Image (cartoon, rainbow, N blue to C red; front, side):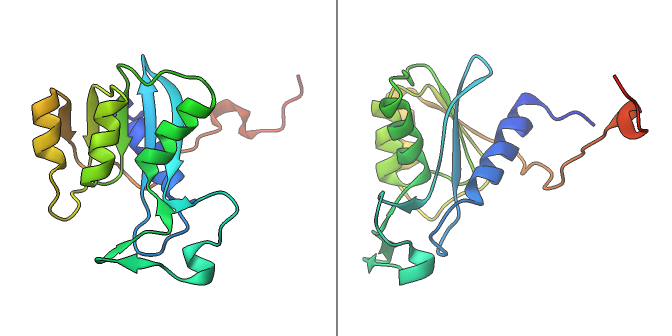
Amino acid sequence: MRPTWDEYFLKLAMLVSERSTCPRMHCGCVLVKEKQILATGYNGSIPGDEHCEDAGCMVVDNHCVRTIHAEMNAIIQCSYHGISSHGATAYVTNMPCTNCAKALIAARVKEVVIFSDYHDTLAEEFFNKAGVKLRRISMPSTSINYDLGSYTSAKKC
């Protein structure tokens, strides 16, 4: 069955999260505007630094500070490529932390779609104050329904 747009973009965020290099949490973010992908991001170390999965996490106040969060990496990717995130929707595998919520608000993201809550943060309160719509939907299927259809037989063009 064909996924809805929300399921499609969240499944992409799930796939993006597989690139995460911090074992404490794999998170993926896809920034979308008008059904077009602007950028993706996942939890990972700063360019050139060691990854948590190789060197271990740097935990301060129960948070790994070695990694840049998925939402931040997606916003940075937009900036790096000169793409405006104004009016975009962020599809994120987990509820953003407080700092990522503030960054998404400052980046003028209009909506955040998640399927998994994170531990207690101020994100939801900040989204409400800023008028950013937060939608929680069910986790999409983790399977990929790849169908070659009529191309399964050996046909030549």
